[in-house]
Length: 213
Image 1 (cartoon, rainbow, N blue to C red):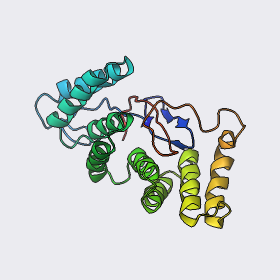
Image 2: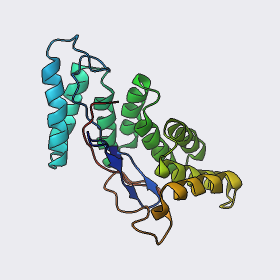
Image 3: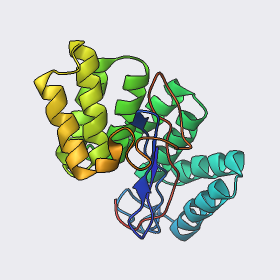
Image 4: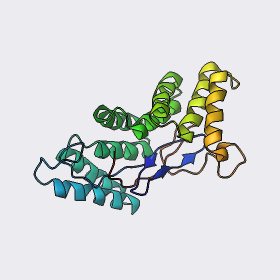
């Protein structure tokens, strides 16, 4: 899974497929744009930051409760829903992860990390059409996302039961051009994440903080 930070954040990959990390925002929780229309939005914003801190300190259940409070404070806070989805995906609660991600995606249909993680969920369930659909949307939002291209190529290869399928190899080649370490035996490759796991698919990554969506 992917988490973002004010420094730009990032994502790690595990096995073949990567999952995206947690996201936070320093903006107030009065609206999905960080407005200040609701009372106590400062407290809500502080709670979101605290939830991220607790998560990285290993206090997962505390962080989960705090993210839930964030979405109670501001049901339109896409970061709160996204982070709940990440926690659920790490816990292998795929149904809950899907529910939370869909709520975030309804608020921001271009939320690439949500699209990416939904693609990973579908990949793990061997739902190749679903994985391809979400990963294509992720690459449309961010054409420089090597991991999304890589996973898309793998999903296409599974769907066509042909690892040399042109569409699949094109996607894999784009991924390797963007990140040569994805090739087996090169660097860390697609390994070593700390997130949710699934059928041959990925684990994830971890949360961070950003002031942008």
